[in-house]
Image (cartoon, one colour):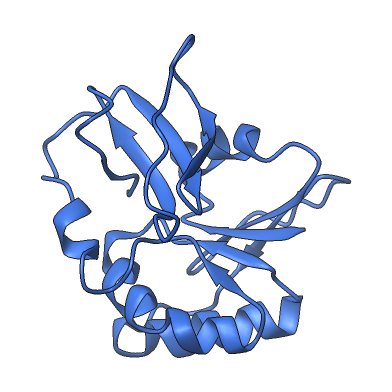
Length: 159
């Protein structure tokens, strides 16, 4: 599977890579991005930032790069991508976010520091940065990368 993580110039994106061993991860960001390509990951530029057409920019990029799953880390990408998830799905691209009608409930206060993160796909926790974590099964429509201090207080993992 080919996974796109936005905010690729941020250390949080690099931390998130360890949740996807065995998959190719494309770390992308807006503007200048280092030109590094390895067997398991690469960096790429998404071009000039235009917040008015985020979903369009990312859909075009995903189609061009044959992306299977997108994980948006920039806070300004969350709502547009959640609202466009059905369109992405029509192209076979999974948007790893909660449903658009509930996504704002998972946005965090910018000052809030979260110690751990977990990746949920279809309600199953496939990765947790917390050792000996016992994540609970959630609704099968529950998707996303979440930061947390307490396992019952999940907030989207954003930069």
